[in-house]
Length: 206
Image (tube, rainbow, N blue to C red):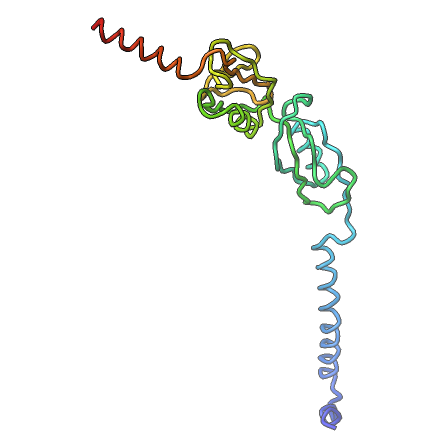
């Protein structure tokens, strides 16, 4: 009843123009919002992710930029069979369809063999402890070698590639290590007695 009363006597052009304008606004706002949202979210846009596996970082970035994609190095690993700096993996995978601006995460190969500081395992703990420590750092071990004239299973040195390496050195982690242990011909008490004897002789001479 109130609505009928509102329209009674209102037949002027200005009045109906305002009514039509309000209707248009009510209809236009959702339609415009829908199209703007559609454009903002790039609805229906699909870009196929190219394969950049085996490419250098610069080449991979160039290929992705050409397709409106973003390259981000997410991880680095070492594979001696792959070229230094080459892309070893990517996510999303090649062929996956994405929208422009999508980040493509890359895993690349180290520029060189990773270096690790050799811990001090000589004369400290057992052979088992030395093996556990070195393997936890990623080193690969060859069968250990025995050194004559040292207490059995005492770790007396570490070799890599035929040369002896020492605690604190930065050495390539991809090359195998060989632990040197005593052969057991003498025990540790004999070494201590020998050292004490040398020290006593030195004191007498003084």
